[in-house]
Amino acid sequence: MHRRRSELAGRAASLRARALAVAMVVGAACAPVPPPEPAPTPDPQAVLDSIRRADSLARAAAERARLDSIARADSIAREVLERARLDSIARVRAARLRICGGGDVLLGTNLDTTWAVRRGVAPFPEPDALLEPLGPLVADADVILFNIEGAIGEGPAPPKCRPGSTSCYAFRQQPAVADALARFAGDRRMVGNVANNHARDAGAQGLVETMRHLERAGVQVTGYDSLATVVTAANGESVAILGFSTSGGPDPRDLAAVHRHVARAAAEHQRVVVTMHMGAEGASAQRTPDTTEIFLGSIDRGNMVAFAHTAIDAGGDLVVGHGPHVMRAIEWRDDALAIYSLGNLLTYGPFTMSEPLNRGGIACATLDGEGSVLEAALRSTVQRPPGIARPDPTHRAAALVDSLGRLDFPLTGARLGANGEILKVPVP
Image 1 (cartoon, one colour):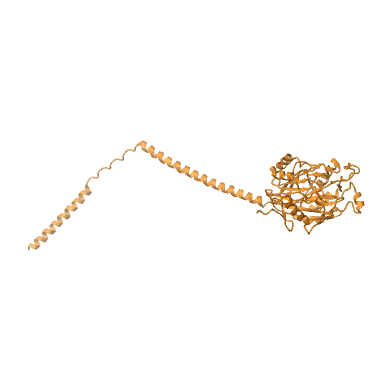
Image 2: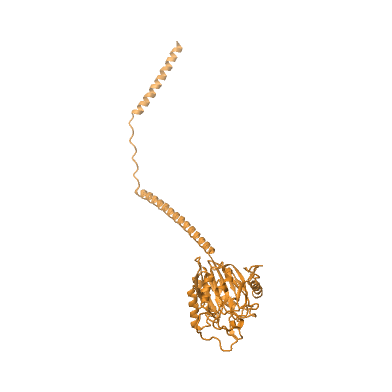
């Protein structure tokens, strides 16, 4: 009984506790909700400062984006320019022009034919037949440069030599020679140099006629004045050519003028070839002294070495020499080449054909787009009287040039390979 009363008392206490809890919950739910606290009034200066900070950050972000864009564009532009520069260099280096130069060319003379009568030969042979054997030696040329050792024309001409002279010769070729030279060149460009001591053998009017015949045939002319003759090959590559002579044309002894004329051409053209007709003559004139050369005791024929060095220093890339009627040394000047004499190439007429006057050659050089000589070769020729030229399988002219280069230019003289390759002196 006592335990029963105790259980009832416990249940009553539990019910009272639950009722109190319910009452508290209900009371809380029905209690009035306090109003929200009013939002603080913003400080106008703080708002302005916030806007300014946001604007500054936006401007900074925009400036960084602009600078990044400029930097990217600048980087791309530099890359494009560098690619263009490298492409341009590659194109220049890839550009090629092959020029082949020969020495004296004379295909007979109509001013004095007594020599032909004495020798019992034809004074005017077929010029194409004389040139034909040399064709293989210029087969790879873009431009051919020959020294025209005599006027071209016909009819009366003022006398050049005094009666009884034993050291004066007057040469004038038939007009058909100009056409034969053009046919020989074919689709290559032929250039005839008239800066020499025989292109004016028929007088001033004879020189005009010579140039007229050559140009009519399609042969370009150089050496009649100090301006470069610009020659454009069939492949579109071009070269500027100037001719100098102590006996007609621009004077190679005036080195200041030489430098001026060549520099002017070099400023306008990437490739410059200079040809010179100077120096002493004959079998005893094979050496190339760095001094003034005298011919026939009193004729100043200039200093070939000083001329060639001046021309190269002024921007010339290739110097082609003739005049001594014999082969002379070849000299390298960095990537430029000075060929001091190519001798007699094809001289049909009253010329001495004994050794070494019967030796000649055609020198061919490949110039890149900046005028540097990439490689060169000398193709030897030999003549028999009265001037029949043939390629020389013994390469005797090349052997002579090799020996002369060792003697006259120990450090810079070209060495000639077995097949006439023009090589530089090996560096020790």
